[in-house]
Every structure is written in C-alpha cells, then in structure tokens.
Length: 175
Image 1 (tube, one colour):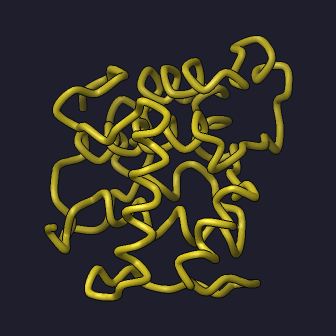
Image 2: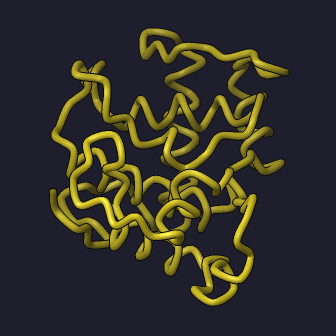
C-alpha cells in the first residue's frame, strides 16, 4: 500500500466522523500536495467514496439549509447526490468552474455527514479512538488502521461496490 494514497486520507476523515460531523467539502482535500493525484482524481475519489459510504450505510447526510433544493433534486438518493457532486464540483478554493449555484454550496458546504452506528461499531472493533474532538492521524503501519482499511473495503465489497478508481461509477466536470 502506498502511504500517500488519497484513499487513506478519505479513510482518516471517515473514522473522524465517529467524533464529529464534517461537511462534504472536508473530504475533498485540495491543499495537500503530498497526496497522490491531481484535482480531478481527488474529486473523483471523493465522490466515489462518499457514494459508497452513503450506499453502505456507513454515513448519513444532513442538510443545514435549503430543504427545497434537497427535495427538488432528490438528494436523499445516494446516486443523485453523487451525480450532483460531479456536475457541480467543489473548486471554490481554486475558482475553477465555480458555478456559484445554491445547490453547489448546499452539497459541498452545507451538507454534513455523520457516522452511522455501523461505522461506529467498525471503528470500535478496530480499536480506534473516538470521542469529542478526538482524532487519530492515519498510520498504515498501525494494525488498528490496517484493520479499519480491511473492514471498510469488506463492507464496500459485500455491497458490490469494491473500490476501483480505474472504473468510476460517476462522471465529473473536469477543471
């Protein structure tokens, strides 16, 4: 396993959800130059990961504002949510393809994800810390993180959603 694989960054964020809620944009890291891939790869990875986590009941999503946009776009359906993430990418920090749409802001900035009991059980089974503002940095030499990696991949595979960035499920708007 490559220690700088972007998937590991996403796993770390996922585990942190057992301590706190995060907005969707926090999963799309555009600042870390030491992670593999360009912006499109990171965006694609983020969308694929969030979709799998929603579909596999590892996370749930809550919207802070604009419930009418949520209902109108049927964002409670994971496929619709992921498709809209790709159509309205989060390039705000870069000012690339920024649509300035309320829906884009709602998806990336005002959509918060939380751990489901299923994710909490997996994290606890792996012996990873959780609690208010307790976060552990991912360390793939630590057997707890290796077990977490294996468990999350097992859940994806059991749901016929194996991690495969060579064959993404959703398209994105390129930069």
